[in-house]
Amino acid sequence: MMWRIVLWDDDMNTGATMTFVLHRVVGLTLAQAVDLTHQVGREGFAQVPVIADQQETGVVAARMQVFGLRVEVAPA
Image: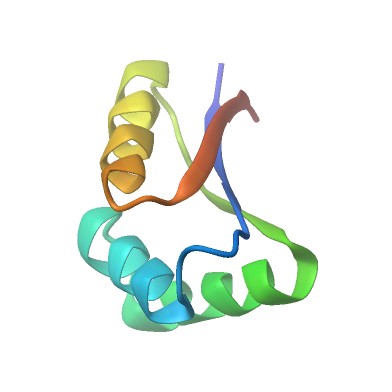
């Protein structure tokens, strides 16, 4: 089963923080990180690219939460 991370918009984090985490922690290209950050701002959430393994997805989500981002792990 494939898993995904949903990144939710919140009032606490700036776009710069989201972009930094998506780029440096998740490993997206800077362009992908910026695009997802803009999507979160427009739509209130964005799906971070799918990671195949549930455990790996959970680890990445936990790393994002360390920075205060609001995320959830869900089946893709």
